[in-house]
Length: 194
Image (cartoon, rainbow, N blue to C red; front, side, top):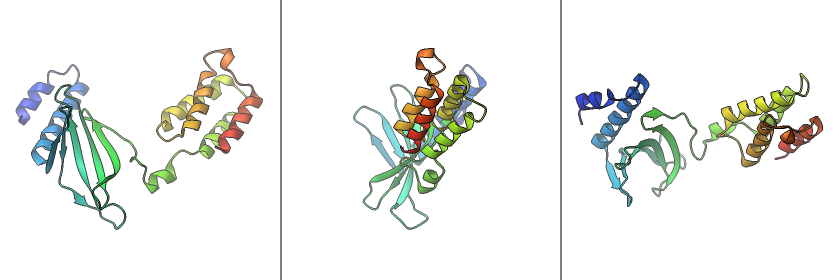
């Protein structure tokens, strides 16, 4: 598929944003197919294209990395990510890059040391909740702050932090879910010890 074919297909998308995403998806797939050092067809028919592995820039557990593109010919979906390998060739870290041509801004899995240092912690959560009480106890404000934290840091939080935030977000839904101020303070204390 050439540039003219990609342009023709993407112009059929409903909006300018959809056209750009489709164009990015198709050109990314085309580039992956053209530059693949390794191509693997999975048992379910999906195809993975891997670029030539690039050696790690620094010494350590990582031997190198390769850019991977997964294509599902049945659904037409694509996904791209970086895979890092150890010296035995095992995948030790994945960094998502795009889904169907849409860039993904995500951490590495598992997170790097630098990412762990900046991740949202239990202490951060407790401090943010305590700040909401400076202006007095207000169920709606606490619930909205919890929702904002969940939106901003949802990928960084632990399962226990997740449960605490969901409890706080639910307070705005009905009186039966509301915590009293002493119950909120107890929850904040519990968060600090998670």
